[in-house]
Length: 387
Image 1 (cartoon, one colour):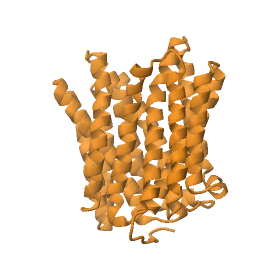
Image 2 (cartoon, rainbow, N blue to C red; image 1 turned 90 degrees about the horizontal axis):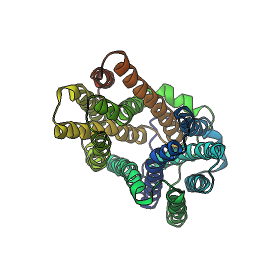
Image 3 (cartoon, rainbow, N blue to C red; image 1 turned 90 degrees about the vertical axis):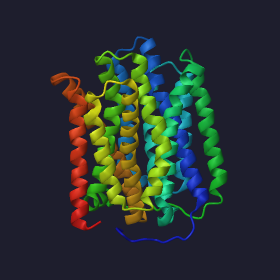
């Protein structure tokens, strides 16, 4: 039920630890598997179209879990779902490590996406259930920092373990299984539990909180445009592949460092105001990209874009916990997952179309204008509500 606050005086730190460790572990696996699967399949002369379809299986798993969030949380609730999701990730990684059959990799990628969606939906709902409002921003910032750091750390394992065999997948499967086992132990001290989402809550949340959904959509739009599109933009302009890759790293690492600061601000100043400011900063960051020539200036600007865009999600997650409770938290997390998928698809498509139809500079300019439009919409809604 909207705006029904269940006040807790003390944070459930055991639950918060399980959520952050679990989400960070999964983000490490994603940071590794996204590039590693593409590299391995490319080395096996698998056509790019087939590699893309393999990635689509992950998205299909995400979507199915989102649509089934109600029945899933009714059958199995609380920490058991997070542990089950981690174990599912571990199993899918073990499958990737032990088989070379392409169709098996499609199945494993689908399982990975399905379990990923479960982990994030339940984690975010539990995080808000376990956290008092006066700490909500800072805890959300730590959660965002863990995920960003995980995504940044994953690719670093590829040079260490190589791409010739399934050793990286196998080692990661063992690590995820260990996190699941540790979660079981830590959960014994938890005093809270996320509630199940009943039938119809998903659509109910979307209609009640369209701006929160749009905030996550804006984050997905800007985030994926930067991660997938900007490296192509840099290579088109003659920058080295090493610099293009460094731009993604410079987006991830400073972003992880910045999120706790964003979380602190969310607990001290107007949360809707933070959403407006971060959207405007991200949009302006894209707009000035064509004006910058120095590699150092570009990397600094890219770090600002990344920090601002992810701050949109941190803010949305904080506002979700402030305004909703019970099963609506799970429904909201599911809506966030779907909004991110739609936004990321829109961001990558818009970037590519603008670059192909006009010029390389048109791509960041278009993304910047769209992101600024989101920020303006947030500002108008906030002023009307007086928040």
